Image 1 (cartoon, rainbow, N blue to C red):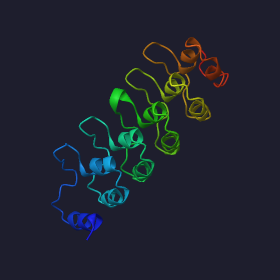
Image 2: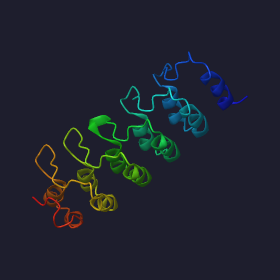
Image 3: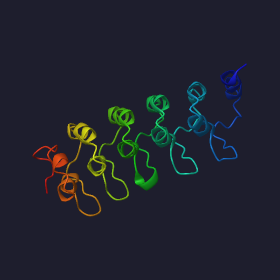
Image 4: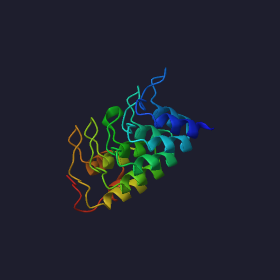
Length: 187
């Protein structure tokens, strides 16, 4: 009997705490994600008792950790899970979309952007939206994908009162500023 078989036997017991932490303060989900054990993690996710949004000791939810570690298949499993909070807030108030842009993780960015519950206007602790991040980290193709969306709000400002467009102009990123539509909060 392999790991998956043993896991299935354990999960049949109603008294098993599927979110219990090991000595490293990792839940089974976090441990398997860290190891990249996709098959066992897939079996674990079948149990509805698993808290797919539970942050680790470092404050990262599994979705953030999957993006950070570039675990695309695991990220896909999490994104398909109806329990996942695709807008969960991690370090600095960053939502998964912020992190995908910061990490320049194209697959994670598009997976997050395509999720029906994604908030493309999420603001971090500094008021920065994914638009601000795309400008700040100079990822033009991600900026283009964001500005094409109908639900993006161009008038949101960060704590310094700057829209993403204004940030692009003031930081001398003319090429990025030109990617914004004419009516995109150019104040």
